[in-house]
Image (cartoon, rainbow, N blue to C red):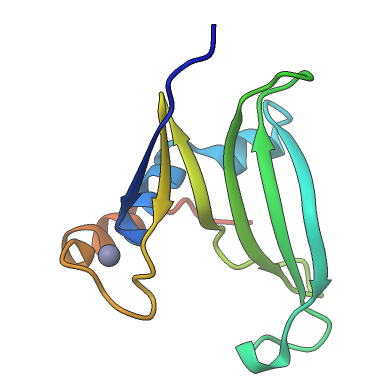
Length: 126
Ligand SMILES: [Zn+2]
């Protein structure tokens, strides 16, 4: 039976907060989720990243051939092994697909409320 999936366009910072709260990146690092590399390219030098930085688009899903896709993120992986915070393009929340609004280029009315929370819920990266 297919589950009904509703799409919601929400504040970028609210979607980032949810990605952090769901702990998706850490769960994937502990192999509790499957990671699929959708693309891996040299970072565009216009985005102020150090040389040899890679730009990665990742998909996170439950294990198995029919595993539910939980998130798609973008992040920068630098040559020294450090990473920028994962920026969600999509997060699955129960029966909803959360898609971020383009708050980076144009802040939305919810940005103020969620920006601080997103930063607070960001777990420290090694
Ligand atoms: Zn916003």
